[in-house]
Image (cartoon, rainbow, N blue to C red; front, top):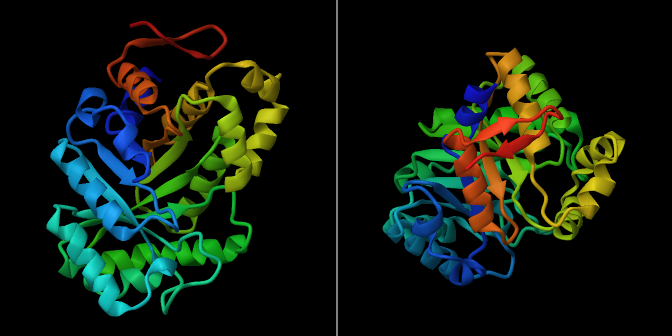
Length: 296
């Protein structure tokens, strides 16, 4: 189990917003060189701010991975310009998603359309992440989610890109493990990076959890002995129970697609990174209650 935990955390990634970037501690002080730092799409953030943040992330020795939201791109010339902008600051990887806009601003409305333009590889993009929804999507049926996921992976590979999945963040391992088994059984075979919340406050976590539609995780947490009460009473949430559940699944199924952890720090970047590094470097033990305890 220990080796699996360290493996999942070996190349953990984090997500920040361009807006919060100026107030964060220097990335080189809290993250290992080469860490993937994802830049969240926010509807009211100018693309130029995302590009500037990507440049700063790169200059700090990290690997910037901007989100590119299809529904926020008005047309083909703009998409080419956006890709040229990030290529100019050394970006070689993107997370492509539909985006949270209810109404597209132009002719793109889904991820597959962006992937199929051929513009990404022309701009030097080599790897591309797409979003996985282990707990479903409020506006899309599960069968359609799978068909779209399979199509995105196929198109990315046909275009010479290296695809992988990044999931929504979750409070429990069970929905993620069940979803991974399902997509694997239906032919999807790309690496999965599991989204987990960072070491932030329970109030913030629950607010984002309800907003992001991770109801199945909240239900599992509620069913666990004192789960929600324990979360609400804790000054800081540690996703150790979820991480241990994921590690157990990987240990039991060598063919599992679960390969890494992607953190949503929600303002707690330094604490989240320190915790992840302790686990990556083996400074932990699993106690008799099946909880992780840092020994550093």
